[in-house]
Length: 84
Image 1: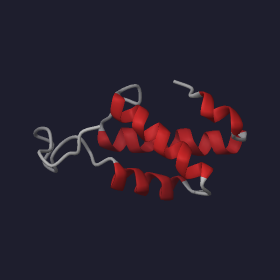
Image 2 (image 1 turned 90 degrees about the horizontal axis):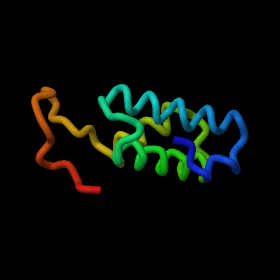
Image 3 (image 1 turned 90 degrees about the vertical axis):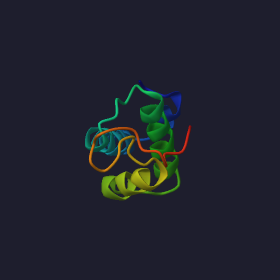
């Protein structure tokens, strides 16, 4: 996946976006090609476009915007999860 929006960013910014989304996806057991992964990519692009300059800041914000799809004990979908 390589959204066209990434073409307007520098190599460092692209690396920042992909690193943050990859880290978020790994920690939350989300495939980056899934709908949730694509939403994370769009949010990360917007965050970097608005000045976010740290993968930690982006990952933290992604966790706020897109909570993990599974409950804290990992046994199933969260019932409080918003629908995309």
